[in-house]
Length: 223
Picture 1 (cartoon, rainbow, N blue to C red):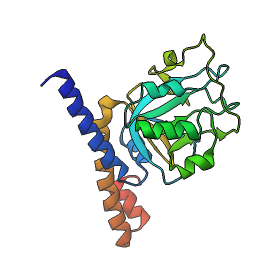
Picture 2: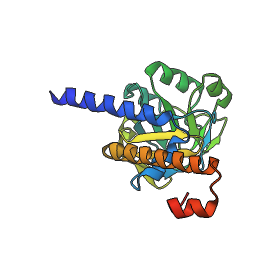
Picture 3: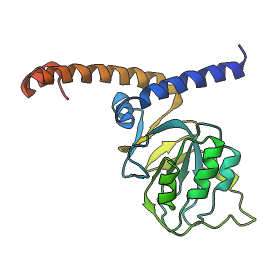
Picture 4: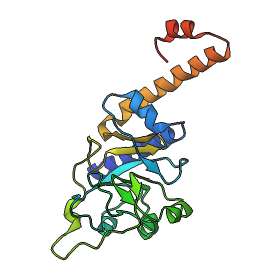
């Protein structure tokens, strides 16, 4: 098997694990509970609480004093990517909107996480576009000036809410927040998720059988 074939097989296996995860309630919580190496970011708003996504991060780092359009990210995007825009929580201008979402859907992008502002929230909702953001702001970003190449800001390590996110890290987002799983930990994380789900199923069975809290704590230690 060539290196390219091996990478393709690994990506397919990871995609299967992520699809398994998204079939469960609160996937961001499950991975956060499953392994201490998972990064967690809270305090987000989402276009639709029902949205949930999981995919590799395509990172963009934008200086908060130089907020510009990140349209060139589409040149680097692959189907299934989650665009993560790190702009240090700057909210003066919107980093994402309806046209970007429309173009991103055509490119097969899974969704967007913006550590700042977006706009066209109603249009994003009509498009059924998954997006997580800090605030909404009607004013859009200007195009980058000729001397600035936004491609230089993309596919590089970033930090969002103090959590490091590297290109290719798996981003799991739902109405609870955003969790970040380094790809080398995905197998361990999913094994932990399965153990958690098994334990929670046993706890629910005990609760439905009328077992009281002291007995539950004695048996399981914590809930």
